[in-house]
Length: 224
Image (cartoon, rainbow, N blue to C red; front, side, top):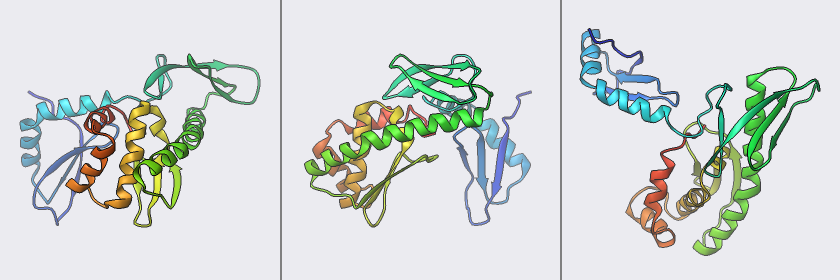
């Protein structure tokens, strides 16, 4: 007997069809109108191969923040570095990067606090690197942002508002440098084209003819 995967079922009366999706942790989510348990089980059996492959891809994404056990790695500009936890007597916590590894010195083991230190490292790195890239590509593309902001988000690497305010996910510092540049160009292009239609992609292609390679690389990384 084949075991069915665990899932969360969200019933939405406005839906006409059944959809299978995953959250960032690889948990299966079924969205549908009201359907029977038998129908759900039938779908899960029919889609079992796709479900397993899709979950595997999500869990293998680079840079996912799963725990702090042995072998934990942090990505920085597309390269993976070991994260070393060192307990010490000092009450203060310190987070260092020596171009070879990340070292987190701690007194009390607190994974929530560890993550905040790591998030702050990425945020400071993004705030340092991204403005100059925006300035560089703004001149090349002759497109000017109204404002730039940074925050950690779950699903987007960047966004451009109707007022041409650009927002960047601080976690983009995990990405290779040329992919980071692509994200900057992508969001600047939205100043001119508020959509993802052909004109938008043609705008990007004028400055990055190989942008499709960057979109493929981008899918290998987690936004968190």
